[in-house]
Image 1: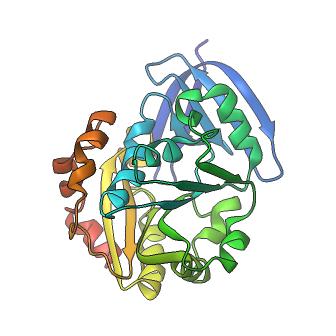
Image 2: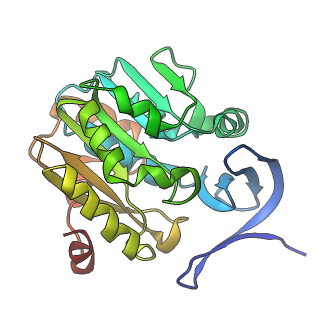
Length: 279
């Protein structure tokens, strides 16, 4: 009998992926961590508490968007903080920018990092790069004493539940803003516009209390709820599409599967219902 991984959303629909075998399964202090070999074009995939995080087959849809949209708005990003992102995909994309001198990865769950290093090397391949500093700790505490340190902050978090819950608060966003240098940019995953409408509305109300500039950009992710995802773009000085790093465009575009300048510019065009959710 064929076995499937299934994730059904509160809206009553979801995804199913044919399973081959479980490569890793354990419970950390924070959550259940599994890496599964699929019998599909998606290859291996990571789940946390039985919720889809990333697949080998479509992870670039997420990681290219969370990294390159904010990075290409900055003239010379040197210092980058990635919060969450223990699979390493966001770090991999950030390091494609030759201006970067240091990436700090702050991931609460070391088991996620270890499992991805062993079983998902296409994503975790840059975690041992000498430019990368890994902090296995709670980002809520880590960020409290950081002032004027980062050009770019990327919140590559899980959903607002479990270990990720505290990353969706006004206090946390205020501390993130304080940690950013002048001209700094925050990009934060902001859930599915199809499934997580209430969460999105709450999140943007909080972000807009903290950041004078707060916009939304979107892209498709086949294995995420609804197949459509949103990110928040926040800054004190930088408006979306006000600057584009032409000097890095060719190198970044050639290294990516979906990212290019035209696609970048189109990401900020929103459907009416999402404009209403995030206003």
